[in-house]
Amino acid sequence: MKPAIRALGIATIVIWIFLIAFSVTALFSVMKLGIGFGEAQFFPSSEGLVLSLPFSINNSGYYDISELNITTRITDSNGTLLTLSKTFVPLVSVGSKVRAAHNISIELGEVMERVELVFNDSFFVFDTLVGLNFARIVPVQISMNMTVPWGAPFYNLSVGEIAVFPFNTTHVRVAVPLSFENHSLFDITGTMQLEVYNDVEEMVTSGETSLDTRSQQPHNEQVDMYPSLADATKLTETGKVRFIFQNPMFTMERWMPYG
Amino acid sequence: MVEEGSRKGLMKKLIPRVLKAALWGSFTFVYVYFLPRLMFPIELLPLEYSRLFYLFVGIAVFFTVMTKLFSETIFEHAFSIARALIMTIYFIVVLNGGIINLTMPMKETTVNLVVDLKAMLVILILVNLLGIAKSVFQATRFLEEKVETSQPFMSQ
Image (cartoon, rainbow over all chains, first blue to last red; front, side):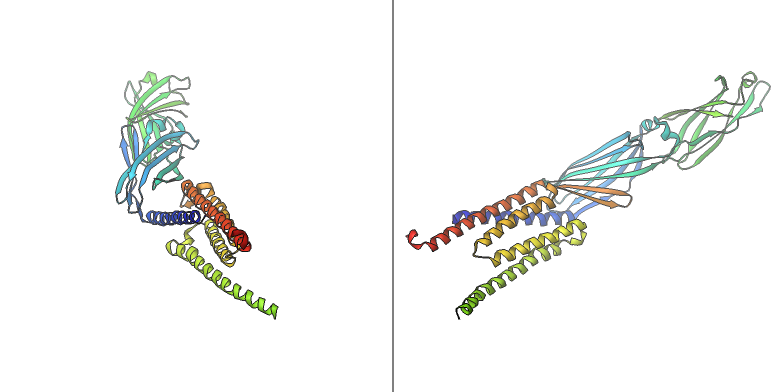
């Protein structure tokens, strides 16, 4: 029985030494980890915007960090998925430094398909999940969610009072006051087409204007159209204006009443 | 006279045991309380975990004192087994079955940290099971020796 007791005693001591050594070195490794974040940057892409979050990991500890996986899920206020971005770093070995960037692609076309986001301020929910394997035996998962305000690019889009002025013997000038506020993070550049319809939904006249509205700036403009005298007579006190905005990233269309 | 003599004998036996138990208790306290605090500030732990740390210190010191106080008796082994069992339950409770979940509010967001310590928990349970096995063997050997010393003719 004595050898068995001795063997068990030795095994217990060896396992305790391993456990204590691992716990202490693991704790020191975590404390010695250098995690840095760069400045978040927005880049235009062919389909919209890319939010780039650069980060670096300096592993001066005693254990490898493997299978680092960063996932970001952006949903709108209704919980509808807008984008899902993933970044994978297979290994941050002991003594090495890894620089990477977590890129979140935002397809403006997809966002603009949701009419309420084009005209109304809202918020997005960012769900971020970071998973990693510490020392290859301790899986760690960090999750966080943030609410980020969304500014509508065509906030408070409205048509003022339409005025008709004489232009020449055959045509008149129809002035359509257009106003909105660009609450978004990006500048609005593109073409805005306006079509004026009377109360029987018959098109009276149309015009076009180029927009270049800076982020967080209001836009007030008078769009002039030159219908013939015959067409101008179709104009009624009330009616609708159809807005069609186009740029390489997205197209937006909206009907607004006037009068 | 006889009573006084037996009291003296008892004191002679008790005092070294009490001193030994106090010494081991103090040593264990330094080992499980001061050394970890030197390496890692316990204040950084969430309140719930710092309380559980003090509980761990209490269990370790109590059982060390008890096993040394009752050394060379069957209770020494009984306390060793009880310590291993309580420690096993303690580790399962503290490590939440191997999954530690911490929620930390940070500025405008809440960070949720999940650490999977199942592998560590398995090793901790294993080491305590080995401790139980060792104590059972020791208790059996102790009883065996007791029987041998109480029946000297049978052993010859």
